[in-house]
Image (tube, rainbow, N blue to C red; front, side):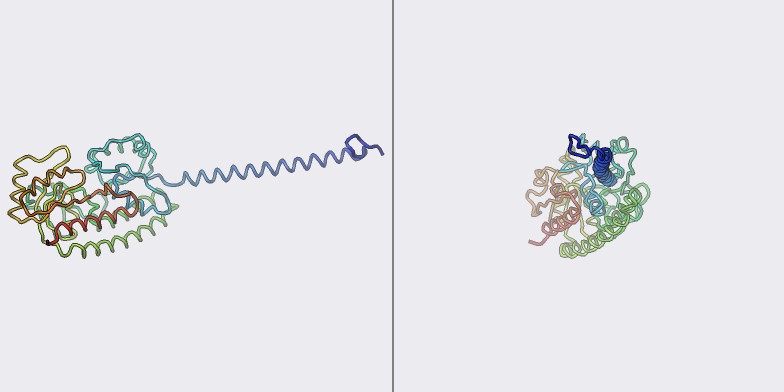
Length: 338
């Protein structure tokens, strides 16, 4: 028997070489299988990430309700942040991308988010656009006119049937009963686009509805002691909140940041404060406080601030509840007897 230079018997070298090649091939195959498995796992992870439905919400209160319904299934993007008015918002490149990539877009309606309506129409044309003001079952209230709202006083009536030709108030989210209806519509729209998570959306909507019921009871108790005490608002944004909880606005300055009221309007409001013994004048963060000071100067009326958009609050599922609770506290404190 001859011994080869590699130390193997010459007569067995062919078989040994074959076995070596087989073992090498086996190791290579196992490495290939592991590599394929890793690639497959990476692909599955990418698919899972891509499967999260892409959702955009216009303003903080709407975003809050959507975030609550989506909990555990994804997170919506928010477009309008800070104290920016939805009437005068400038779209950033990141906002444009979010709208363009969205599968579902939630907004109140074109008459509120006037600065967004055109962008959503063009950039979001492939998305399911849900205009919450248009959903069935909402309480819809008319815009009030005049300094004293004469002929437009619906406080304490609960739901109001809108008459043909009336201009409508778009601040629907400030009535928690409307928020309950909106939550159901949000869950339905998300389920239609993302059936895999339909059960999650429905369960979250149930939880949110229960929280809204508790919020209604809490605010009702919070403002019970100040009902009937007249106040003025700088911007007539709180009709839904007043209507739901039996509060009485004597009038509104009805100003916008770029269109302050004239001298005649301010004079009429000062007379109103005195004649009706107005207890409180409520402003919003985006309005100049100097105007409220002019109206209340020389009177016994207090100054208060109410924020209907949650401009100073952190966005997220809890914002809506913080917003409404803060509003109730602001009304209560400003209207309380001295």
